[in-house]
Amino acid sequence: MRVVRLLAFCVLLVVCTTMAAAQTRQYIWSDIDCRQSRIAAWPGLKCRATNVVTSADETTADFVREIFEYGKSIGQISPVVRYRDADYVTFKDGKAGRTCMGFRRVGRPQRGGYDALTGGILCAPPGKTITDAEVSVFIDKAQLQPSLR
Image (cartoon, rainbow, N blue to C red):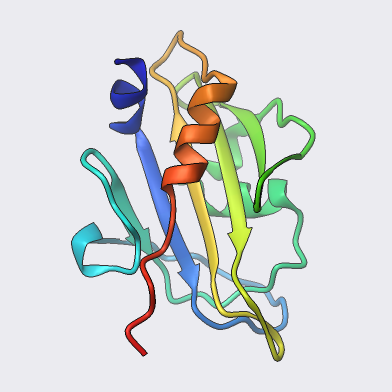
């Protein structure tokens, strides 16, 4: 199934659990074991986390550019599309020549921002595209597990 093949190329990220004012940031990503995170992971998912605290006032395109490992090389960014509780854009990975999509979803509002900001990147193999159905499946599956608080 094509969706399963595409999922091997996806990355889901939990950006932060608290929000702060926007500032100059340098994202340093660490690979994490998806099973040890709040991410509800499925086979083939690569999970990464950063200690950068961010706000949700940046554009979706800026957010995707910052979380994508080759963010400086992306181009052909689409207008923002809303799907349920997430915003996403499609783009071209200029380094690997892949078609990709990136989304962000804000959590529950709390004083000073949101309790979480979740984002994900899904890239098709070179020469393939991502369908609307694959976008919706990816965003629907990309959920956080309930907090243990």
